[in-house]
Length: 222
Length: 222
Image 1 (cartoon, rainbow over the protein chains, first blue to last red):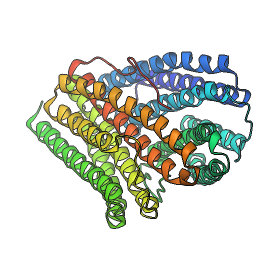
Image 2: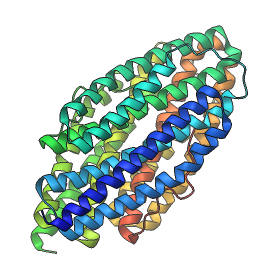
Image 3: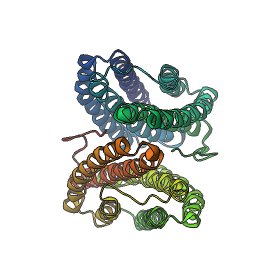
């Protein structure tokens, strides 16, 4: 590996970390927006999404340039392909944060504060998964990446529980159907964030071990 | 481009087309399963998903081998990266077909046949988008790919209309909340399939024109 190539890889890692931090911040803000029903925060998340999109496009272009210029093989090639894919997953997590934030406007219009499932717990778990997956990439730590996949089973279970709880509530209080469907939407977006964190973790495991672990024990969701 | 490289590219195209055809078939079967409430067809979709997963893993390995061996540049490099990403989108469309199929079991338990939005129209549009996106890739046709993005706006509008219609129905018939939430889930899965078809189309445009068109006029969904 030439010194020049090494420097480019470091630069890519730095940009990926910066993207991950921005996405994480967006997700945290989205979560604050819905829990505090603060529409100003929600608008902030929507506005920040352009920045995330731009970062994704730039990082992809950088990866392609590095691929074309240095034509790496083995672990270096796998690293670059993983960055391309993880870049994509992070951008989608940003989109899902926007989806969550946009629900603030609906929540802000109602005085109903009943949340019949553990939303704060789900929020916390989703954020931890994203953080752990990105850290695993930077540290090239397959064990930590494996933990993300276990957490995803937990998040899926919680989403299923949320689904049942919401259905029950709608039967009891049909006039609040819109509100409860909105809550379910937040739960589903968190569950999808967990899926993207799992994609990232699986790419890290592949990169480190050279073995594709995707689709093992896959469990799709309602 | 060496003759050997050309042959590998042809082989990758063939495998990608085969994957696309399998995913399309899975989607058609899922749609028949829910419209005819046929749980045997639903099980067929779930079982076929392993095959799709395996095809995705193989195609990714093939792409990486070709990248490492031939170290292509310019349009050839962009083609390979596009195949890697499109491969991923197709596999996810397969997952969404499974999500749709799994709802058959819920629908089969009820005698309610009311569908308060144009589900057949949405199904048709989603399938056409996937087909057109894959054809655009094979033909390297950026104009046709552009059409997919327009269709996605239409599909998004239809999903929004479905959301309102379902919410209204739940208020009128709360005891049927589970049934209507299931219908909304099918609509949402179709909307996500549209997003993946759009991703594919955007990658085709990028490959042909060398310009990233992602995120232009992006409109996120409820």
